[in-house]
Image 1 (cartoon, helix red, strand yellow):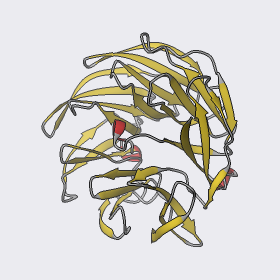
Image 2 (cartoon, helix red, strand yellow):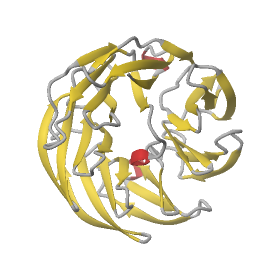
Image 3 (cartoon, helix red, strand yellow):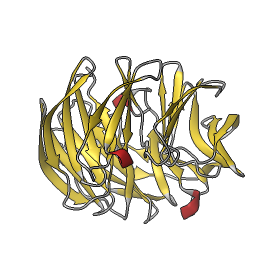
Image 4 (tube, rainbow, N blue to C red):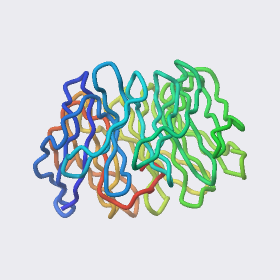
Length: 318
């Protein structure tokens, strides 16, 4: 059985972090109990043997470290609003804050604040990507991805047309390609990485409307998967070099697919739907990349982030 964790929105009825079991043979879920009660634990990442989540305590917010059984280990409150994305990269833990327009860098064990990127209030910092000594921060409201070096000094940016809303991205394993999705224009952008330069190679429509959220690359890097909340769909792209061909679009099995992930064996996609409060499994045909119909379901109220038990660092999202 595969173990996973789901972070949830307190404003929509989530009570904290839920832990679930998934049978990779049948595609069915076991129980999904609340393992950690915490306000606004809406995104998760692994940091060594512990897990990290944003947390709110009264008027302050920050990061909470906890063990897989839900025991609280450490907490640091350093901002007013909770972050929306966490990433452990080397000896640093990055917390992106959409509303405050910041990325706070902490020690992953003590949670001591080591530095901060200030993109500006309302910049919409939605994620942190780290590869090859570079730190990329998609700023949704600014229609750009800002590029920083290891000292947190801005050294460049990737600009997009007004109304694009760059949200989340993923590097390939070699760090030679960057795949990035936009929330508002609902497009997939493919960049070739040349040192510190990001050369646009392709762009493809994901859906007709907006609301695109998460993106994942298959382990063999032949297929890319995207969720779109505005239309409640999952989209599959076939990847060849820097070309991306849309090959499938199906229902997410609920409403508002906020996050999803692929199981380590590559045979299943697990989609977390916030508004319908369910976690749904879909079989993956590893030869074609196509998704089959829903196979299993577990109740997760107000789910916003999914984390599977696997080696840290895969897809740049943990």
